[in-house]
Length: 129
Image 1: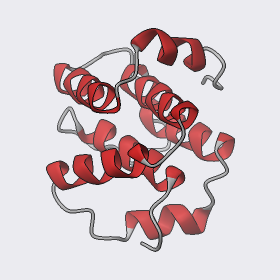
Image 2 (image 1 turned 45 degrees about the vertical axis):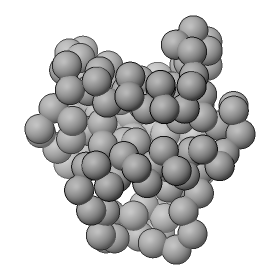
Image 3 (image 1 turned 180 degrees about the vertical axis):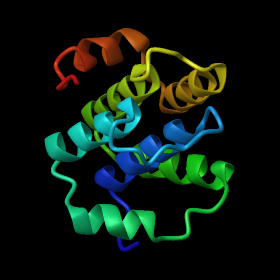
């Protein structure tokens, strides 16, 4: 997939979160998919970046989690908080927070040592559906 960076980290988080409840949905009307489209526009993640990501071998969920934590450990504090704010928006997009989604969000937040209050402060500034 080329060099992994903040943008690929965002896609990994989306991918992990969108499948955490056991159901990945590629329906353009799905709220999680709509949030991902907003995230791509806001974070300037182009079609080629997205296609490269989707067509790469992502490995197991555990591999993906390890990869995304390693990617984000090399980003700025603000980028870590921003990535988790997007992750939270994907989690709450369908109005139903699945316990596996919350577990995943909490695990990433703890591994990156980010306070929930920081995430919420950034999240309110992100575009909404």
